[in-house]
Amino acid sequence: MARKAVASEITTSLEVWLLNQRAGTLWLKDGELQFQYGTLWLEQPQAIALSQSLPLQAEPFGDRACRPFFSGFLPDSELRQRIAQQCQVSRSNDFGLLAAIGGDCAGAVNLVVGDQVAEADAVEWLEQDQLSALLDDLPQRPMLARRDGLRLSLAGDQDKLPVVFDGGRIGLPLGSRASTHILKPAIAAVEGSVINEAFCMALGQAMGLQVADAEILRTGKRQVLVVRRYARHHGDDERWLRLHQEDFCQALGIPPELKYQNEGGPDLNACFKLLLRATRPNAPQVIRLLDAVVFNALIGNNDAHAKNFSLLYNERSPTLAPLYDLLCKAVYPTLTGKMAMKLGSKYLFGEVQERHWEQFAKATGL
Image 1 (cartoon, rainbow, N blue to C red):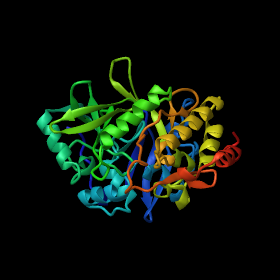
Image 2 (cartoon, one colour; image 1 turned 30 degrees about the vertical axis):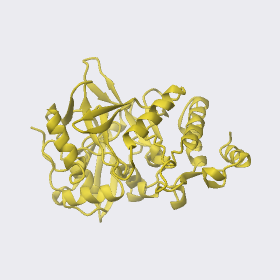
Image 3 (cartoon, helix red, strand yellow; image 1 turned 180 degrees about the vertical axis):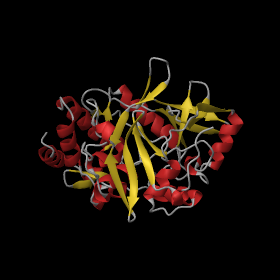
Image 4 (cartoon, rainbow, N blue to C red; image 1 turned 60 degrees about the horizontal axis):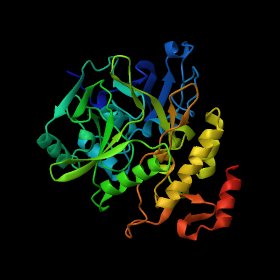
């Protein structure tokens, strides 16, 4: 059986694992997060930093430096509130939430309670009626919080679930098993969201953009979108291994609650500067991000904020990760038409003219 998460009120520290090795320790001090890289990690010639915002150093990082990265693994908004209630911790308690659900996070980070990694490495395969029951239960138990053997976390404000998918069966990853796909049920307030997102993802691929693979599956009477996790790959023994990644807010040291530009979050200028600084050669990555900006604008993906772009640490230098969360929101009159990041000086795409594209190009150095 997997090692059970200890209740957050008696957990004083979390071991931070990266690429199946202990990278450091996260702990609370006077109610604030602190993180420090481990000595053995720093002594490795191949050691990499957790984040562009957390460079390798022996000294510990305080709350202001490390909270944006670690809180970036947690769900947002009302979804976060429901998970907090399920785990019986405050919604503002990042550490308590990470202790409860921070086992299988985005990329290659695992947060382990105590000094042992979960022993179990298995899959709980689900029959169709079991999967349907879990999906019915998901709004009341997001990420299946507090279910034995599971500590799953994804950022965002939509109900979704990390799963293992082998092309025919869907299962839950137990213990240290890496999930391979993300299961996304329909969004209740967004009619046809599964078909909408599947179409936008397929359209991006058809236009030659690097986009995460996605397909629609039917379980019972509902359709769900199953998205392949690009931060996973097959090892030599055919086991799924994790790749490291971080979203742009994490890389820029911006807390997830400030992901929108009008709330003080990153603008397009900051996103392009990040690529210029972090990637080598950077010209191909800059062109890919430019294509993504144009594509999101044209399909009406108004919610393309900085957490919807990521760096993928797959080779010697980071690259822009494949695109994800591509959804035409402009088609819904009840949703805001305001874009997450300005084009030039405009938040509304309908007001963007040639001169605003020129302002954008000048500000980003294009």
